[in-house]
Length: 164
Image (cartoon, rainbow, N blue to C red):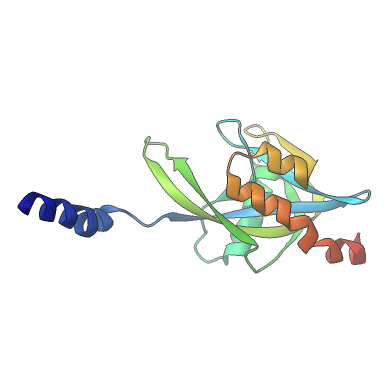
């Protein structure tokens, strides 16, 4: 009886205290109109996976501004307009430089791309590619990010019809 009490105390009392909340990251869902469909800009991670440009929040900037900064640094978005509202969130695991694995909650901000630069800060570290949203959803590993990519075109169709 004491053993089951201690197990329950450990499971319901101690373990929740030891779990850290997920770290927050911001991502830029960079998009453009190409011919008659929307495309999204993907970049490679340091491990070679296809991802959205993303990073840590930046002191002094709103999250959507930090996402726009990541779009510049990682994908070369020279001119873009970032939505101030989060379009979606997804969970992922990030391996830090010291080997520690950190759970992250990534907030995704749409960025309408007006101009890409030929040279940008991380051009030697990453590849970038424009792809239709459905293809992008198949290229990323995180299921929740794939769902965001599948949902985006329908929600932004009116934007592209007016300005595309």
